[in-house]
Length: 476
Ligand code: NAD
Figure 1: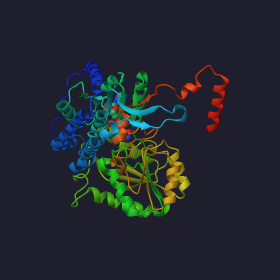
Figure 2 (figure 1 turned 180 degrees about the vertical axis):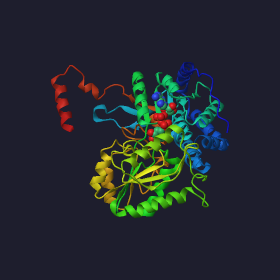
Figure 3 (figure 1 turned 135 degrees about the vertical axis):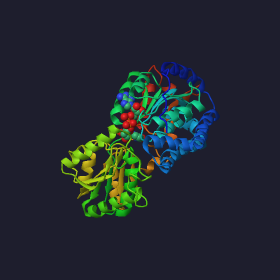
Figure 4 (figure 1 turned 45 degrees about the vertical axis):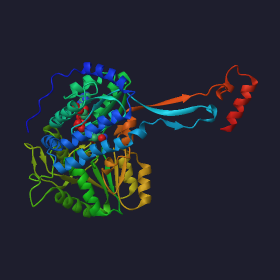
């Protein structure tokens, strides 16, 4: 596939001004206009499925079935769910009055925030740009989208989609790297939706603070897996291997490290090795020949991962599963390491590649302490059948989400809010929660005519007012 050509120098300021004007006009548009825009994205995705596959293959060597499952189906789910529910979401929501405001009528009205910025990463480059765009449009906003420069084929395809479906004052895509991001971030957006690393998340939040733009930050982190004594080992190994090694481990929700109960260690390692090889190879082909296994996005990440493995091995880690690497093709075999010391770089930073440390624990307190001394992760996974133990783990840890007896699939559940907590993110996405992130929840209160409850408390503060206040306080 030919590398994409970049757009001519984008007129960021001009587009921003045009979108400001358009955003004002869009505030009073009916739901049907919003639904038409979203419906057009759904139709475009279906009509261009092969082009999406090709771009994702060119950028990440993604197998087409994996692109369907992790990029196209989630985007289409967002389209379908939004079309089905948008009328309800847009309806003003009635709320009851407290005793001090009896006689008033109030609603919460969802208004568009205005002009929004979406900055997206390279690992699921289609869905992580288009998903937030659907939410932004559902909430009635205009949007400027900056996809990742490290998935250039997909970035240019998203630009083509947007150019075919929207005018620049509705939606516009700006290709490029940090320079383009930073130019965009200097503008007073009404909302910024960023998906990427915690390090860049901090840069985005600082820039947003200058304009007091609201932010949604969808970040990453070290998502742990607990394999408890009651776990079914082969099932746990299979599900962990899928979530860890699809997209070559470059998934924000991938299991980052496993804590397995000492009693299951040997059987778990054996099952994990077997499942990993079984899942990603076919007909005795090597993993490098396998059509089911993706690639590392670029040389920088390839070298970063090589360094993480070397550092862990130099500090005494043992390779339970290892294999060839081909830096010319960014091919990296899955690595499963045991005995990884806590001070190894692998245990300090998000791995984001096909390397999985498997640690052991003897008592749960020890495992919870290790999890809790790290920044709050995007997800926490538990394998086991002991509900009391699950409840204890859920209560005593904090994470963006918990998934029991599987990994990462909660991303696909459109009725669940998706996002992290503190270091793994701020704010939520998907379905209604995405609509909410791009909306201002505006309270509208209508007071009655004539006598009102609050008027009993007006100054001058006579004895009667004070008696009434004392009576009211006794009610609480
Ligand atoms: P990244 O933070 O390097 O880049 C993300 C975006 O920010 C890109 O568009 C990039 O051009 C831009 N950017 C990079 N440096 C910038 C700077 N200095 N100023 C302004 N913008 C800048 O992330 P990535 O490498 O593309 O993606 C990997 C990270 O994203 C991982 O940490 C992963 O966990 C996280 N992630 C999170 C989610 C989620 O939904 N929570 C999903 C996917 C990826």
